[in-house]
Length: 67
Image 1 (cartoon, rainbow, N blue to C red):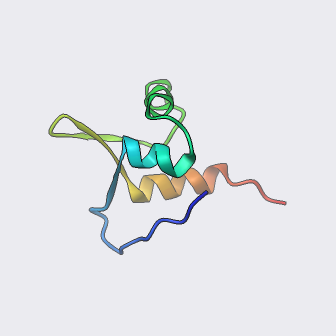
Image 2 (image 1 turned 30 degrees about the vertical axis):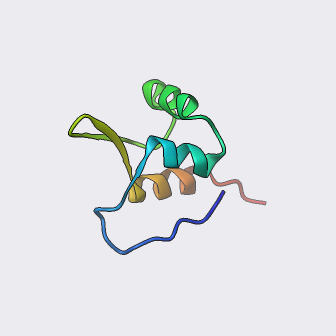
């Protein structure tokens, strides 16, 4: 997975399109994951679906494969 340039701000978010790009998946796949409860937790702000970077990082830590 690509590294995000991260700020220390908890106000940093990814759009569904940018998360799809990060994971090399289509935005439709990311939306399907969200609806199925399989991906990072999203928030709806003003009608937009956003993914807090802290949630993306938590999801990635949980799914990390050791070895």
